[in-house]
Length: 433
Ligand code: GUN
Ligand code: ZN
Image 1 (tube, rainbow, N blue to C red):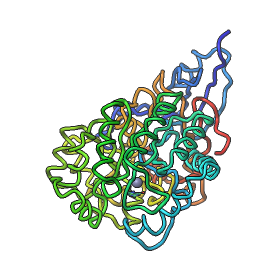
Image 2 (cartoon, rainbow, N blue to C red; image 1 turned 30 degrees about the horizontal axis):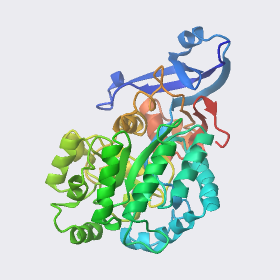
Image 3 (cartoon, rainbow, N blue to C red; image 1 turned 90 degrees about the vertical axis):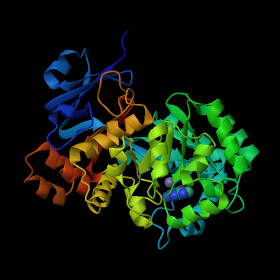
Image 4 (cartoon, rainbow, N blue to C red; image 1 turned 120 degrees about the vertical axis):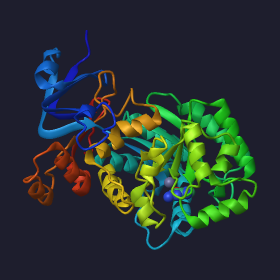
């Protein structure tokens, strides 16, 4: 017996390359009357409704017209234990961590709290159209167990790891070099490659890890080269100065991580704002990925990410919310603020490139473009259904829109969870959108 098929009908948008300008119609496929055929959680075919439906055998048809169907959004940097930290007033990075973030994260030692908040976290990101996230858990092993348990229950492709942090944090929020190694090892053993879970080795940042802990991170990366590595880099001037004090032999901030062998194409470096020429050279040489977090960078007053400068050197930048310093779970709102950050530097973010970035672009940075980020046959059926007329203000503006790019720009400037009509995770409609 063959397994059941689902046929989603609507306007479909699928990127096949990064658009190199507003008129790059070669970079995507758009079907006014389109469809996506799904079986066993995977996309069998997508494109024009007539040809896709001809391939269906007894499929259940779900009609989403006139909405837009595209690959689910990918958030490449978010903190799961900060769901109750978002919107905390009046501080820049180091004060914000000490005043709001560290106290909130200590609560995740409690498995019941971790489990409850994991449910809330996944409700939020799904409601905002995000189907894959790369997440920081708290220092407690139990928070990562809760994160992956809940992701598995919802059949979501998730990447995450417990933060390693053994100094400059309060009691109850520090591990030791040995315990961070043991807990990370155990989590990799339990979760990495299980279903849709992937582990990210996560030294939080240079300030909260001793050299002895960095050595443990290095050992883990050597032993588990198929895991991701994530950390923070050059977000704030006080942070950079303190890092230089703590690692006096490092040539610069990135060299702290580089000297412990952490850099490579599987590494994600949150923020990467105030980079020196040598650090940019090192990013180019190693293929590590800066992660642009616009709502966070504006909220904490951290600075302006130089997207064009890095791209011009051939670096593949990812983009992310960074909740709870980020102020929205929405990748649409992330594009909104990202657009403005680039405007302030005379750089421009065209809507075609913007929507490519939060789907296939972030998938490319993760090396997952054959699994997520597009509607190509064989991809996992994580899909977002978007309504560009979700609010009265959007509908009013849409009346004067004549092109796909205009519609996308309305979505990214005015859209949020209200514009997400529905989300499919591994081919199944999520219950909470
Ligand atoms: N640097 C170290 N930890 C954090 C964090 O939780 N958020 C942000 N924005 N930067 C960090
Ligand atoms: Zn962060």
